[in-house]
Image (cartoon, rainbow over all chains, first blue to last red; front, top):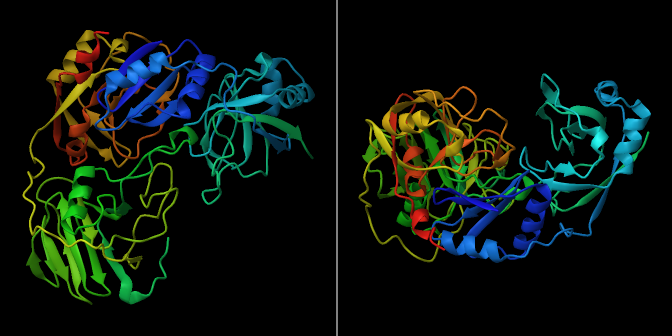
Length: 202
Length: 302
């Protein structure tokens, strides 16, 4: 665990891997240390935003004292996401992974994914925990327009575009389930810790 | 946005200048679902405008960029203009910025181009009462959350006046500088990804604010900041004031609507007390960074 200061705005906690990030996030999020206004989990780091009058040293001590709760990344909630697997990059993903289209779909639906962190857009979640065989690079060229509901793969992650936006993920399918609705509580279905299963529909 | 409030309660936007948005103190606490804090780019100026009209500090007000804002009052309203000091007129008669101004029913309030600085704030006693989105009335131009940027014809409801009354007429404040702006920074969190020459250049050279600047951040133009580490940085959380360095080597200074996470290393961060001043820098203005003694360094002993 390494602490990196972002002036007096924040404390960036660098950890060994995503599991450590999620364990620390799970330990802190129910009751963040005094002066912490926001927690931002990411692939290798947890950023703690600090209030103007926060005692950064005290926050650092509280983080060191926190007991990471491994394996309990939030929870029990399981979200089932119905997907039509007709994505424009399904053939390319099959080629990159050496699998058939059918095998790509089977592996994507067989895994239990967990939302690791967000950040790209409101309601977007980086889903981790998938099979290593589905690890693929981003597209060489980003699309200027990816429709809302597009289901994609990039690196070790899967994700669902919450709204139309540019994007470079490999698209394998689409869902009708609205991932982000500003007037719904909660607005985001994909929040860190939520477990996800994709289910094939036609 | 609520635009169909009865006219007598409303301010009507007549013109907006280059960009006018509603802002308050934003929506902190939602970064984990990809929602940034947003809110006024110059938070101190927003708070001051609200204090002048005895509103709660975080009431929603208009953030006008480079003046050009005109609104017509549907009924008498009490307002204050802060931030970049601009000529203020009520039906053509001069009024002062950083003061409490009465605008009679039917009168038109105009903000001219500021003498220095970029962003002026127009607070109305009672606050602008459009429907909040996720607890805030701020427009986040990156995430596309909150009310749309204002356009001519937009009607803005005004909330009920607070119980307290304005107790000062005028707030003397230092105007934003029009020449070279000095901002205090603390190196890190990723200073070690850069050469010593890059750090030296950042702290000894002037950078020019380019026209590719908005509420998300200011692209700066100056000496290229070279990295010693070439690998990709896994995306990590970002703060306002961060100087993020993309492959071009020219830093971007993040402001209120900065992305929640970013994938380029941050060489240094502008101290929080200087972020408001950074948000008043105009395209073409020069900025210089000086190392701020980190409060953090005093806490490193345990």
